[in-house]
Length: 305
Image (tube, rainbow, N blue to C red; front, side):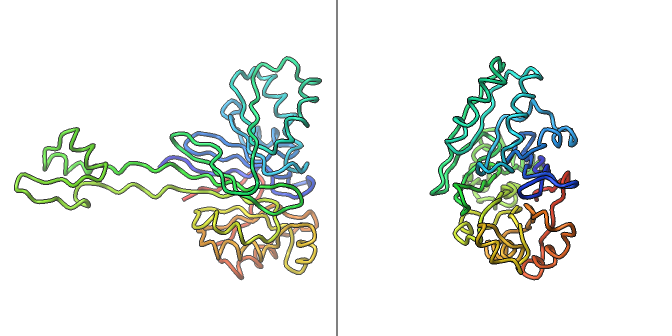
């Protein structure tokens, strides 16, 4: 099965600590590498995790708070110093280009590659990128400034023909193509051969959703329904739910409630407040609502099944 995994580059909220960087992740979908958020220290973490910089062509920024973007300018500069020539696509709020352009003009006037800015929208679910392996959708979250989540879904694969059936029925290429397309096949005796005798069904496309920096927001459930792996912010424990509400963040219990009600397979908790050195109480709180919850940790890799 092709690779589909997420590497946690940073899991803290607001600021770096001695063992947790601010938000950033790298998603590998069949050797297509997507950077999700770019907090301070992201390029150091990319090197630590031996990610080939030249394979990153798309960066997705959930919103323009500093702990999600302060690593971007340094990364852009490093790409240039490494001799990058391939276009870099940055998907972000429309304000980003205006914010970055003076810095690019001052520090990177001779940048050897093109940056293409794609503006995100924040009022509906939108397909923002697609290739033959994956599609990426953005959807609105609810935070202090315009913020969105991202859903990455594998493109559907074809069913495979069972090799014994090829020889048993002397299938020709055109017949194999027709069967893969769902057309019925009739043998020499006029019997319609059951589909399960001819094909191995294609695996269900895997999916990953990223929801960082949002209040408890039940409207997002419809956008992440049934995903295989969900990353959801869990900035506070539930005893600080009033603070979570006023700062428009989520508690571990609330994140687990979203995961449970959306019918996801597995929940990753992240974006932790620096007040928590021991994260186990957050995990215990989440597991009380949704058992298949995990804490993320910087440099940990999670497979999407």
